[in-house]
Amino acid sequence: MAKLTLRRYDDSILRKKASPIEAITPEIERLAADMIETMIHANGVGLAGPQIGQLLRIFIIRDEIMEAGGEYVLGPPEVIINPTLSNPSEEKVSMVEGCLSLPGLYVEITRPKKIHMRYMNLKGEWIEEFLDDFRARVTMHENDHLNGVLSIDRIDKRERKKVEPNLLAIKKKYHP
Ligand code: ZN
View 1 (spheres, rainbow, N blue to C red):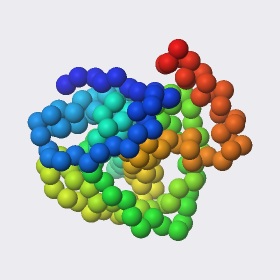
View 2 (view 1 turned 135 degrees about the horizontal axis):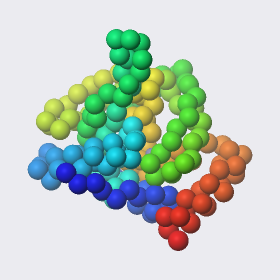
View 3 (view 1 turned 180 degrees about the horizontal axis):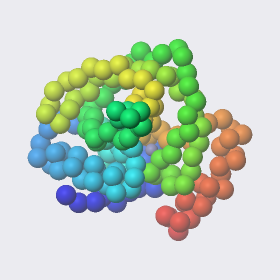
View 4 (view 1 turned 30 degrees about the vertical axis):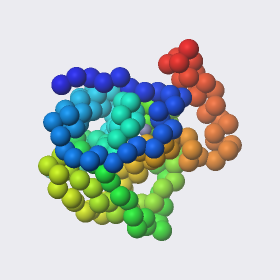
């Protein structure tokens, strides 16, 4: 496995729409393994193709799971391929989101509490699932990346103005 280079704001690849994966080839298996390693190394809970320079509809998520003692821990990484999200709940929730492409920046975003997802796993099986809470949140954030959308696009103008200095700092640090 190999660690991949993370693309940071405002790398133009983060604004492009990713293409569906045609088949699960050894290259895709390798890509998924490398993405998992990259995400874990960066302490992320999600990582999408465009964030490592691959315009493919694939992302990795790590869900929060409750242990026997009632404590939340991060679950195993899961590979999501060619996802389709539908049926967002009317109920919305606000949560603070970070992003490996926006290091150090945390913004509060309102999104649906629940959503339905159809996706392919690494075995090529299609899976349907209703997601809620943290799992739904991470999935919606990563799915946005496949469409060239960043968390900062989902905050209002006033909030966006407030984080502008942080964005400039990221830009300066990674794209001097
Ligand atoms: Zn992100």
